[in-house]
Length: 70
Image 1: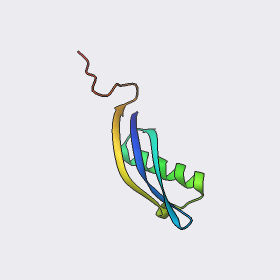
Image 2: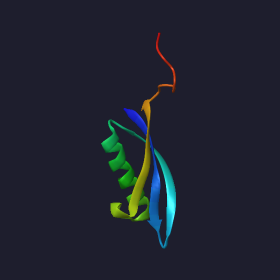
Image 3: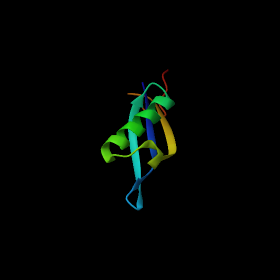
């Protein structure tokens, strides 16, 4: 499984609130769907009120960034 850090904004009343979520998923599309689901259920929002602005792929779980085997 890959780890993704997804950030963006969502509508909170008349304001916009920033968020950053770290999720584990098999691919980028599933990670995006998971964030829509998490933010939507936490704040009672439909996905058209959620805007994803950045997706950072961190690699395999348990793998240190910049580490190489060998």
